[in-house]
Image (cartoon, rainbow, N blue to C red; front, side, top):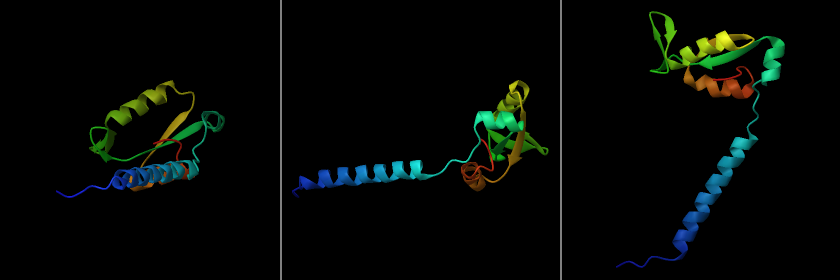
Length: 106
């Protein structure tokens, strides 16, 4: 029967803690450029980024956006005190667009 070193669990724990620390730093280090609610109200509109290939949340039927997210956008458009603009784009561009400030929300 192979002997298991008592140091191995400690090494694994250290690697996991290091990975969590690096991941946490990466999240904090990324600048978020989306506008605040006050900024959105001041300029009069919000830009929402969505994709169109994630049923049942977002999809297209006969050229019309459909799904849960679009239903929520319809409610937001009725209740917000500002215009809600929507841009449909591939998934790969959504998070970088929000981070850079191109879109306010996704």
